[in-house]
Image (tube, rainbow, N blue to C red; front, side):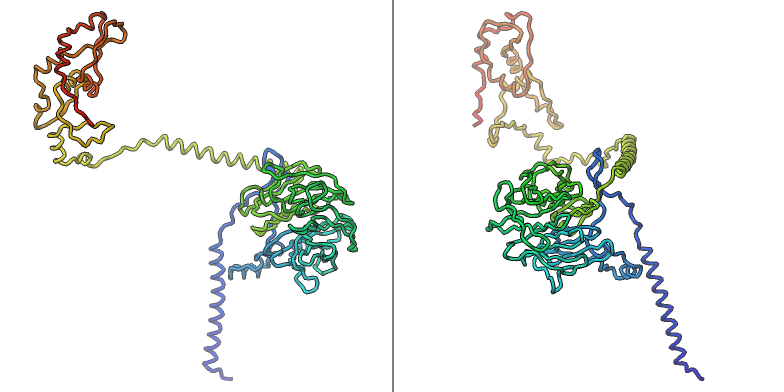
Length: 544
């Protein structure tokens, strides 16, 4: 059979394309591996409380999307690298509110999508419940689970409690519009024969209560009404049942927790509004562990507090920080504790469910020992670095300030220099505006200049013009100046007032004191000389 040249060229083209595609694939893999960033050193998970107290809880994980329960296959990882999109990391809920957990099943109510999301950690799957036509949820709020893993949902829109099995099939409902006004939470006792429904009623309603049903849906009892007395409620928010059957109700409007027995009889209460530890600001969720400890979330303080069964505060986790980090919450809502004493906290703003695990005593000691070792290593790294920086700073000589042109520092124009030589510097009175010209100083001022510390005025052109005091005036000022009294001597004669020339001398500089051992010898100035000096005193200028 004769093969045409066109077929040969076509086969060569196919081989070329195949080789090119393989080369491109290998090139992309090499390029992606080269661009890969080395994984950062894994930090130990945070724990609570902080040293020196022994750790009791440690952060485990966060549940956000399908990737939290399902591990991607190698093919899915490659498609994720090539496309840059991981569909399994899309948030599984829009606005989570309440949560329930048991035997590896974590159920969250989503008030935005009006359905439930179940993280099945045992079978590694993510399920959505209550979105189908049969058993569709209208306005889901609180959720609970019994020992058979049946799911109870308070549907405020339908005014009923809807029940589903562990895979989401609708089983039935409890209560209706005749027995409930606004059910917002539900709790089931350990044996499953008591269903406690928190009926908030509303702001204008008096039906703030807890309605007790049996498993057939019959109303057994109604606990409380609206009010602030023991056993009454004001906007009750959530409820939880302890292993011993004690019912705890979060009375949010009264900022307290109330405890009741199995039959609904009041036992005790604790809590108040305030800013101290153990107080409440905006309580939203409540849960109980196997030891009977009570957990209460607070959106105002952005934390959850742990109390013992008697209401004494044990510790708290969270704080004022709003960062999306372990142990930090922006708007905590529902909370649950499973049979392994793992804590599940809902954060509505960060859209996360945080899982915190209780540690054993041996694990607590190990965590504390590792923390002390890491802190010692960190301090050892900091101290040598600071010491080397200090030694370097001490070894460096001080830097000299260089100036390229010394003459450039003084750049006084020639006109200004000439003007300064010809004009007498003006004295400014601080109290005046100094706008009037000052008349030439009289001869007495010049004499005062010689008595006080004299100032030399340099002049290159006219040095003789600076000092123009006649000899007669100098002798006259020397003879007519009254001598000052030494403060250490006692003088009985009155002292005449100092002439104006002394005032001028005081302004020019401090007068020199004349010391004399004989007090009587200080005042020997003839009256004629004093009168003469007073008569020849120049007239003072009016500065104003």
